Image (cartoon, rainbow, N blue to C red; front, side, top):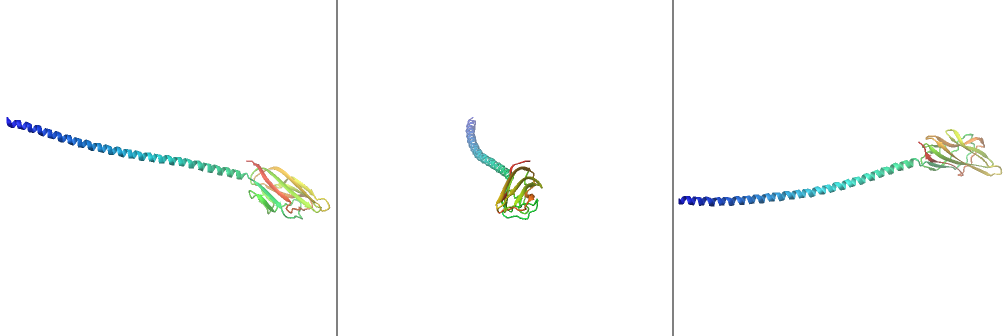
Length: 221
């Protein structure tokens, strides 16, 4: 009977010891689990911070790209506008610096000095202004004679006269000068020049007093 009693007591003590051991192990496991959870939460927080930074950088880049696209669009628009404006800025002005004599009827009066030519369309070799674009143009010129001479001149487009001058210096060594202005529709590649008429002495005095000019009023498609 006594040995059984001691056996029961020993078993009870052993059970308590095992229970205490299990509790300690459970506590250790809980501590480890808490540490793992805290570590994971810390990693998640750092990842979220990094993700927020990346999103912020992406937004800044998108804003910069949008700004650059606007600048590119503005530059392109300005270039197109400038190109359109420059294409309609047609004007020229020339001067006759020489004394011309011995001109036959319908001879070209070549104004030898270019004062302005925005499209490089006037040729000092033959006195022809080649129309750079179709439109409504204004043309004007002045012809002078002296020493009792007289001369007629005319503005021609592709060989057809459209306006005329008649200058007569009279007698007594006087000088005469005449100016004419005409508004015409001319087409691209048309040839415009000043020539002598079918009457006169064949003399144009020039000497920087005579000019031939033209400019576009507005283009036509």
